[in-house]
Image 1: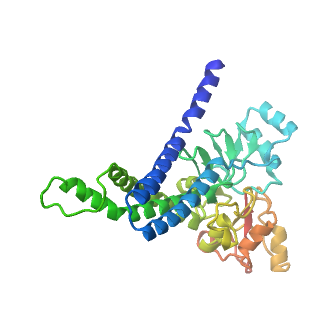
Image 2: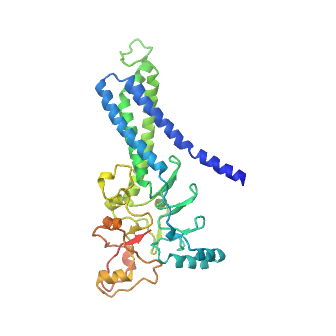
Image 3: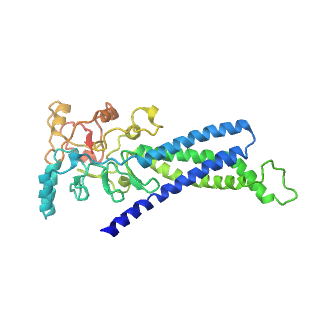
Length: 374
C-alpha cells in the first residue's frame, strides 16, 4: 500500500513539470523582452512605450487565460446520474451483463441520455459508479468522470472539458497573439544582431548602433522561441477552431457518438453560429474574456437528431396521426433549458435529409424535433 501511495505522489509531482517548464519560459521571455530589448536595446522612447503597452496587454490576457485553464476544476456529473443504493447493490450482485443493463436502463429512464456505447449499452462508469451523461468520459489521469471531456492536457496538468474549454481556447488564442507580437517586434533587432554577430570581425562591417552586449543572445533566442511556439500553437488552435465550428470534442472527432439511429459525428452540431454560442455564450462582449459564459449545465446538450417523441409530436402536429417510436426510444425527451432555448431560438424544427428521411415513414408530413443530449 505504501509503495503505491508514494508512486501516486511522484506522479502528481511529475505532472507539474510541463507547467513549470512553460512558466519558466514565459518568465524568461518577459525578462528578455522588457529588460534586454526594451530597456537596453531600443533607443526610441516612443517605440518603447508602444511596445511595452501592447506587450503587457497581451501578456496579461495570456497569463489570465492560462491560469484559469489550469486551476478550473473539471465539472463532474451531479448526483442525479448516480445509482441509488438499492440499484447499486443489485448491480454488483448481478453477474450477467444483460441483467446489469436492465438495471441501468431502469435507472436511466428519466435521465436526459441519448448516446450509448457502440454495442448499444448504457454508458456506465464502474470506477465512479454512475451513468455517464452524453459527452462525458472518465479521465484516468484525473480519476473522475469529466463533463464534455475534450482531452487531458499535460501542458496545463488538467482535464479540458465543459468547465474550462472556453479558457483553453482563449489560452491558445492569446499565446498565439503573444508569440506573434514578440516575434514581429523582435525581428528587426534579430536581423541587426545576427548581422553584427556574423560580420563583427569584417573590415567592411556596416555601422551598427546596437550595443555588443549579452542582450543580443536574449534577443536572438527570444525570436527563435517565439517563432517556434507560434508555429506549433497555430496548428493546434486551428484544429480546435474547426472542432468548435462542428460542435465536436477531440474524443468525438476520433470516435463518433452513438445515438439511437447509430453513430453520427454531427449529432450535436447546430450550425456554426450556434455552436460558437454554446461554447462562448450568447453575449459577445464576454467572448474574449476568460470568464465562464458557456451555455448549459454540461449534462444536457441540444441535438439535431430526429427523436419522435409522442407527446411533442401531438403538440407540434396538432393531433396529426403519426407513428410513435416511444417503444424503441430508450430515453424520453426533456424540455430545453433557458440557455438552450436561446441557443435554438425559433429554429427548433430541423429539416433533415438522407438517413433521417429513411427513419420517418411518411404518410403525412412530420416535423423534426430537436431533442436534448446530455
